[in-house]
Amino acid sequence: MRWFEITLVTFTLVTAVFWALDKFVLRKRRAEAGLLAEEHVPWYIDYSNAFFPVLLAILILRSFIAEPFRIPTGSMIPTLKIGDFILVNKFAYGLRLPVTNSKIVSIGEPERGDVAVFRYPGMGKDDPDAGIDFVKRVIGMPGDHVVYQRGVLTINGKPLAYKARGPVEIRSGDDGIALPGMLIEETVGKRPHLVQNYLQSLEQGGMGDGEFQVPPGHYLVMGDNRDNSLDGRFWGMLPEKNLRGKAFLVWMNWNKGVDFSRIGERIP
Image 1 (cartoon, rainbow, N blue to C red):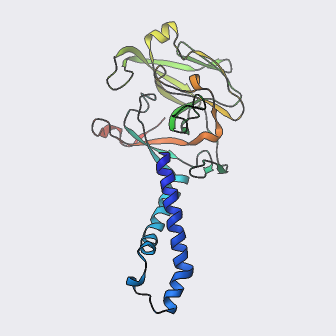
Image 2 (image 1 turned 60 degrees about the horizontal axis):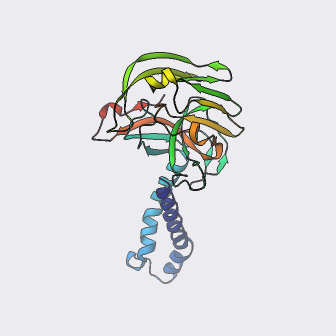
């Protein structure tokens, strides 16, 4: 999505320059020369006058109000499915400049249990995926001590509340091998949501088990598909500066066709 953001900002700035040049300089000169007819307007000025207001409106909407994202992987199953198109509240965690993501106005902060979109910080300087938009659930807040063991989260010494919701088959991808798992209701913060784990992980522990200390200005984020998620358990804590917004709605799903049941689904 970042390439689109850069392209949108670039075209908006270019058309803004020509629009302003025409409005404050060239139009006056044409009037003085008696050349106000449309055939005397250069094509680049004509296009800029037409497209600048539209591009500016799109830029403001996507940067400061709401932006669409597509879910490419199953790391947030069962909450988000592959092919979901989601809407993200861009002012929930403060107003941020496009491209640089620098915060200019502080409005709110993440709450435990939020589904957040952020720029992946990477697993090292050479990680080619660094900067790509990821979506995970906020589990650990700044200063928290978090333990994850056999599918159970303990935050600051208090285990979360869990309810088993029944067996489920878990695949590593669309065409992956199905393994037995368990669908579980987990309550993080104020809202319950569903997660899923392999039965083997619940009984014997898994790769993502560990103990984590969240430093100031950082968050621990995890996928709801706990055994199929590359998240903060593996690449570390998420810096606050990487946050992009809060996911709140699924507006469409297109994976192997349209799934109409997903339209309008609120994200817990």
